Image (cartoon, rainbow, N blue to C red):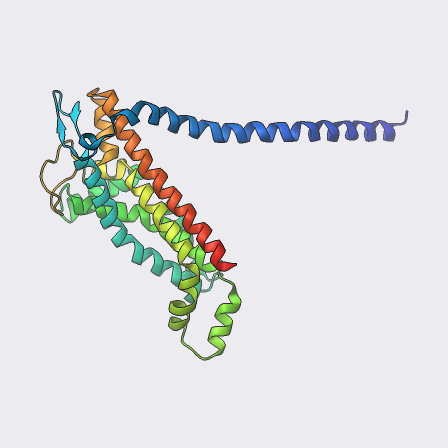
Length: 292
C-alpha cells in the first residue's frame, strides 16, 4: 500500500470517527447545559415553595433570631423600588445612547467605536465594582448616605449598558430601506426615529429593558454598600436605607438565621427572574412577528 493510499485511509477513518462522535458530544453538552440550570431551579423551588403563602410574601420579619419567622415584604418592596427608580434613570440614557450610535453617529468613526467599547466594558464590569463606585460617589462624595437614592443610582449604572446594547441591536435590526425611504421624502431624522424606527424596534428595546430590570433586581453587591440594611421597618423614602431580596438572602445564610426562610427568599427571587425572562422572550417573539 502506497503512502498516499495510507494517508487517504487514515483521513477517511478520522473523519468517519469524528462524524460519529460529533452528534453524541453535542447532545452531551446540550443536555448538561439544560439539566444543570433546570436542576438548580427545581432544587430551590422544591425546598422553598412550601413557604410561599400570604404571610410570607406580605408579612414583616419576626422571630428569634430576627428573620426566622414572619415575611419578606420589606425586602420585596425595597428591591422593586430600587430597580424601578434605577430603571427610570437608566432607560432614557440607554435609549438615547443607542439612538445616537445607530442614527446620528457613524459606526466607523472613532467616537462611536470608543463609546461602544466603553459601554461593552461597563456591561462586563463585575457588580462589586459598581457597588464600590456607588459607595465612593453617591454615599461619600455626594453625601447621600446609605439610602434608596444611592442604591437606585448605582443600579441605574448597572442597567445602563444592558439597555443601550440591547436597544442598539434592536434599532440596527430595522432594515435600512425604511430609513432611506423616509428620508427621501424630505422628513427630518427626528420624525424618522419617532414614527418609523422606534415603532419597529420597540419589542427589542422592551426585551432589553426587562432583562436589565431583572438583572438589577437580583444584584446584591451594588446595593450592599449603597442602600441595603438588615432591617428597615419604616416606609420607603429616598433618604433612608431599604431591605432587598438578594442581601436579605445573604444575611439569612451568612448569619445562619434560617435556611428554610433562605430557600423561600431564593424561591421568590427566582420567580421574579423567571417572570422577567419570560416577558423578555415574549417581547422578542412579538417583535419577530411584527417584522414579518
